Length: 142
Image 1 (tube, rainbow, N blue to C red):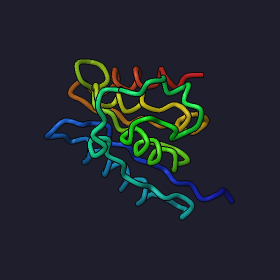
Image 2: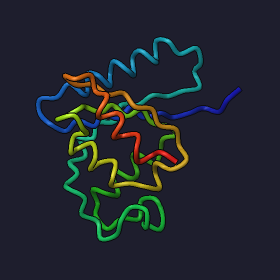
Image 3: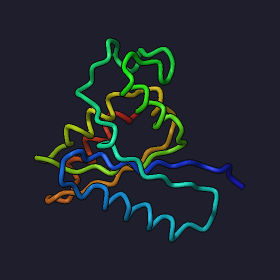
Image 4: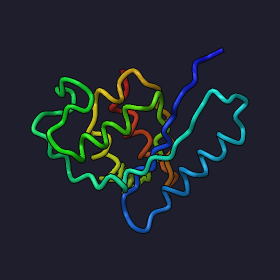
């Protein structure tokens, strides 16, 4: 039997209006309905609610000595939220055949919180979302 896992379904769209939240809820509800085990706890995390400015820390995330050890409160709150999960499903919109600025910014804020944890990508867009998902895979390739 596997250990209990906390999984974040992260809606990365930050614009208003946005459908990213509905896509993320659909993903969460579908997995919950099909789950054969109670060993998973899915939570919806919306990047838009964190109001992250363009990355403004003094050191790059890979050099932060410990998870959550940031200068700015918004960075600490974002780090704390993401660090508490064992895995992630990132729901990302495709804008102009690429990632949205809000998605890229939120991901780039952190490093320690993401490493050695499984990540799945769900992308959507008028062209299908393939360009966004392929660009999002790059930071996590080993």
